[in-house]
Image 1 (cartoon, one colour):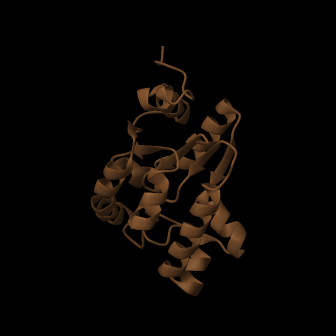
Image 2 (cartoon, rainbow, N blue to C red):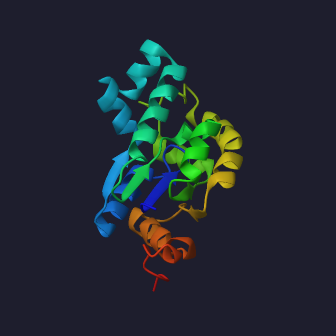
Length: 180
C-alpha cells in the first residue's frame, strides 16, 4: 500500500499548514484539495459557490480527492472540511491511508477564521455557523479518523509532531515515535 496521510477537520483547524509541515518532514508531496479544486476550475471557492453552487463545488472536491489519493507516491492530503459529507468520499479515504482528524473547538475555529471572508458556508454569523457545521460533521470525522489530534492551543509544528508520533502512524512505519 502507498503511504498516505489524509488530514480532515473543520475549516480553520490547520489542515493546509500542518499538511505542508508533514510533507516537508517526510519528504512527501503535499496536496491541498481546495487548491486542487481552484486549479482545476480556474475559480476560487467563493467564485465556484457563487457561479455553480455548493453541489458543483462538492463534485469538484470529490474529484480532486480521488485524484490526490490515486497517486502512486507517498502523499499528505489536506482534505477540504466538507469532504466527509459524502459517504463515497469517506469510503475512499478510509481505504487510502491514515486519516488524521485535526479536532478543534468551534470557538477556536471562529477566532481563526475571523469574519469568514472567502468561506461561503459561514455567511454573516461565522461563529454560530461553525458550531452548526461542527455538530453535523463531528460524528463523521470521528467515524472516519484513525487518529485525532486536539489542535486547540497548539502551534502547527506541535500538531505535526503529534500526528507523526501517534501509534497508528508509527505502526505504519512512517512516524517518529513518542514526542520527547
